[in-house]
Image 1 (cartoon, rainbow, N blue to C red):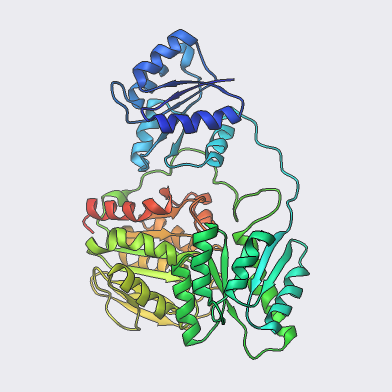
Image 2 (tube, helix red, strand yellow):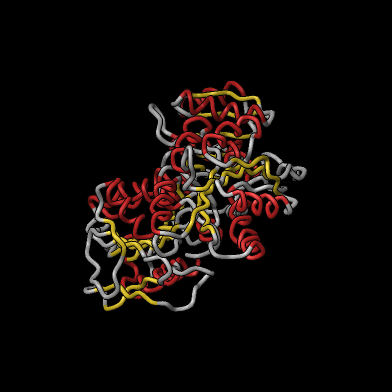
Length: 482
């Protein structure tokens, strides 16, 4: 098969051409629309064209329009690959004649899925079941190491590659045991968990790490520090329980997190299927409404996501920002404190009955639902102990519903990385009220559960890498008076 790759960036052309080459395409490259027309005149009709939007001499939109006026090219598959991500802009490209759109930056897997959607290549056959997930345990308690080893090892999809009693020993074992994930205690002799985590990040890049910490004041502070330093998730270490009860808690709380962060099986992907293909979500009237508030839902991987997203828009925001991060009591207060110190931002844990003020970031306290009460002009915080929703308290759905009720089309929802489906029902309420929803994309999420549910339901009007989410919020606030 043959492909024409059109982009004024040589590195971008090389990435696309290399990926297509792996799929057995012969590629011709062009630096702008005019060069591409000349290449078509010389080489004839290819099986696929990928084209950038913004190029000198002739941009991608004009190039596509010219092609679609020619009968020989009206059915030729055209995939636009561009930094544009606004739905209005993508709609312009679709009206010009593209068949599908892929936002930069992209992964080879995402690119390949687009080609499958276009019918240019066949869907890959399911792969054979992978090897079990290798877990390296690091805990100074011999009892906990023993229970973890026995309980995790009893699951056929997990194997324990080793057990270390301190961070230094853990670091020494990683090169030889080659784990897929490290389960790391926080408080240990010789080398504590946070120091170990930082060394893992320095030496072993993005090797997944789950902190296994006690629910104490000291343990909460250390765990939040670890999450902000790059840990993927944490699990509260049970205290005061017998070995049977501890094993049951490990099966309930630890194994699910391990499998979500390091998935195995035929899909080889994260916790979700890919979103359905098709045109962008229809534009809603909320594009012209003034944004009155931003509500954020996040879980697994949340602290580092918040540390990246909030500084991009909070300093200039003139609306309140409310956040539900799935965490227990102790943890959320420390998270708010660390986010405030790290980014110089007005972040704090919410207090029942307090007024909601523009420019402030309020974090739902662990173990309590947070919702908006009052009216749109004088909203205030209401904290409740109502039953969990989606097995969560706080639950983002509770916050999202109340925001849509008060602010209607002035509500902007943001759904970031996390397990489960919390935020789905709330996002549906926001969209029904005329508001907008931004979702984090699959490949920048630690777990694409929560945002994936929103995307598959067709509720997200933008699906973006984490690095672009905060920028998109800032742009919307600037355009729409927030």
